[in-house]
Image 1 (spheres, rainbow, N blue to C red):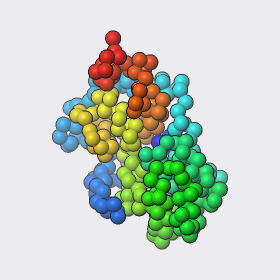
Image 2: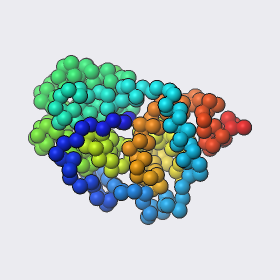
Image 3: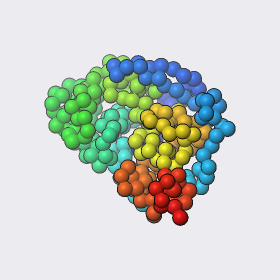
Image 4: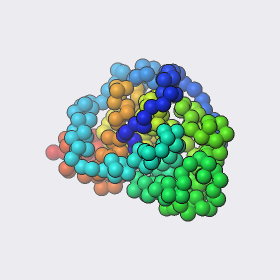
Length: 279
């Protein structure tokens, strides 16, 4: 749910993550992290020999629709939540908190919750020292607010102990934090550190990619979708596609009651044709 990048820091000068596979373990279990410097060539069916039909035309149509319809992510996405007047280290922390709260939660709810945390004092020190019940009250009604309150406290302590209050500058480091998954990590890397090492795939990107036929076969999880998209989508579009599709999913290609009849892709989209909207 990210568009704007935060200002760079000294740590931005480090080399971009290698195009290798690595493993990161968190308290949730093992999380496999994969990187790519561009479309992967060895992913079975998902290779450069396969690209979706008319994808460039569909992409441009989505851009046109996004320019005319403002979505919640445009004004209340996670990149809009941090206080931009504070030091960049703290901006990155507030971005990470926003991402942690955003899981399965509408942007409007996340934005309001982060606002209450900022009024309270949204720093690693304040969150680590706060009572868990107090954090629950501040972030309610985000989904799974009890678990998220616990993870916020745990993560704040880890950041203070291991990262001097900053956020990790690698996907592995981010995924090792309580309550942080791959989607949040890739978006934090892109927005927080200005280094796009993967596509952030949330429920909107996952759903729309399947509906548009942008995957060689239907996927069941966002991680499967991310790997399949990265196999063919030009790397220069990775940073754009999350924000573009999230807003499109919030306004047009909704989970229930998608506005297929008014969508510019009505004649191109497999989902639209399947459900009888295309003529």
